[in-house]
Length: 107
Length: 115
Image: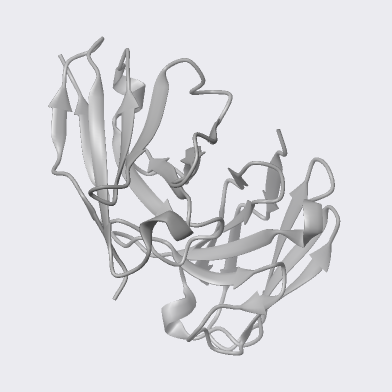
């Protein structure tokens, strides 16, 4: 089973700042099949990124994904008020697993 | 438009089973597999398993192997997830989601396990 670790657990930032979230896999993610989701309280998760770096339809370009193999990054270039949420990575290259999440909260 | 409509909330006693349904519409059901994901109160997302909608292929997370069964009915475009031997730790919101990465999600079914 591919285990995903996300860091940090919580990221405290101000609007306008840059957010860098990490997702590390216990083994190489096949074909870089790595997705990122955003979840706000009381809502279903929203797909942001798939294939490590492809933005889903309608996702603003301030969200970008990068990485390969075992190390992946989600970057939010300038935080907007609506971006404060929990972010999960998910791999779908070898079965499926989710990371534990990173909470981005307001400093 | 793509919709995944899940069954209503359930309350079960410890040791019982629950079967949650997920009816798909707005697309060709057999074109995508269906995953089941759960989220306990205040906790993260937990992938439970995936089922093909056109073959017998199914994958379960090791944690649930032997206690969960995922099936589909192509005649009604519905996926099912049955979880047995429930404990209070199974109290969670259960989601179905389409495909390998999840653009489309069901609305969630709250399963409460309480004596």
